[in-house]
Length: 381
Ligand code: NAD
Ligand code: ZN
Image (tube, rainbow, N blue to C red; front, side, top):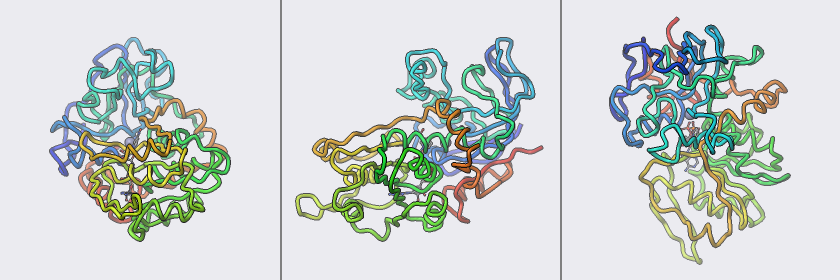
C-alpha cells in the first residue's frame, strides 16, 4: 500500500510498504478514506518527539471502511463506515472507566502517563497511523464508532481529534456564564476551542495568533474578537486592558511547544524580557488570566521546554487543567451539536491533497502557506 513515511526531521514522503494484517483476533483493518495532518504531527515533523523512527507512518486523524475483522471482533463488520478516535485504549482499566481514554493504563503504560496514539512515534506506542491506504486497529471493539448516516465524511474526520480537543479545552476551562475566554492559537484546535467556548456559556471570546488569515477566519467562524500578538508589546498588560484591569477568566493554550513570539512582562514594576523558548504561551496564559482564574492546556509540549512562571501561578491561585483529549467521551454530544447546526467542522478544511503528495502537504501546513488551516489527505481510489 501507499503510506506516508518519516525519513527524519522535515523529511517525509509517500512510499509503498506492506499492507497491515490482523495480528490479534481483536484487531480490524480499515481502508482509509480520509486522513488529516494535525498540529501534533508537526511536532514529529519538526523532530521534537523522541523515538520517532525512520519508516514510521504518521496519522492519528482518519476515517475509513472496515476491510477485515479478527475473530473476536463483535461490534464491527466488513463494510462499516467508521471514525477512529486518536487514542488507543483498552476501555476497561481504572482510567478508561473514568473516560480518561488518553490516560489508559494498559496500552503503552510503560512509557509515560499518556496512552498510545496512532502514528505518534514509539514514545506513544509505535503504532502505524492512518496517513496510508490501510491501518490496523487494535482492540477494534473499544474505540471506533460507526459514523451516523447523516454525518459527512469531512465532519467525521474532524471528530477524531481537532473538534473534541478544542471542545475539551473549553470544558477544562470550567467556563461560567458570561466569562471572558482567551484562546491562544488560531489553528484547528484553537478555532474549535473558541467555537466551543460559546457552547459552555462564555460571554466574550478573544483569540490570539499572528497569522492574519487565520485570525480573519476565526473572527467570522467563531464570532470572536482577535489579537495579533505581533502588534502587542506585553500580552498580560494587553489582556488586562481589554478586561477592565482584571485579566481573563479563562485562558486556553492551543499552541504548545512550537510557539512563536517572545515574552516581555512587567514584574514588580520592572520590565523583564525573557527568552522563553517553547513555553511562551504558558507564560502568556498564567500572566493574562485573572487571579483565581482557570488555565486550560491542550497544546503539546515536547520533553525540552524552558521554565514556566509557576511562582506566579501559585501566587495568583489559578487552576490549571490539561490532558490529552478523551475523544470518544465527547462524540455523542458533538454529533448532536453538528446536527443542530451549532458547529460546522468541515468549514475549516482548506486543502485536499492526494496521499502521494504528502511531502507537499506537510510543507504547506508546517510553513502555513497558501492560507492553510486544515489539510486532508486523500488516498488513491
Ligand atoms: P496548528 O499548528 O495548525 O496551529 C497552531 C497555531 O498557533 C498557529 O496558527 C500558530 O500561528 C499559532 N501560534 C504560534 N505561536 C503562538 C503564540 N505565541 N500565541 C498564539 N498563537 C501562536 O496546530 P493545531 O492542529 O491547531 O494544534 C494546536 C496544538 O494542540 C498543538 O500543540 C497540538 O499538538 C495540540 N493538540 C493537542 C491535543 C490533545 O489531545 N491535547 C490534540 C490535538 C492537538
Ligand atoms: Zn491531532
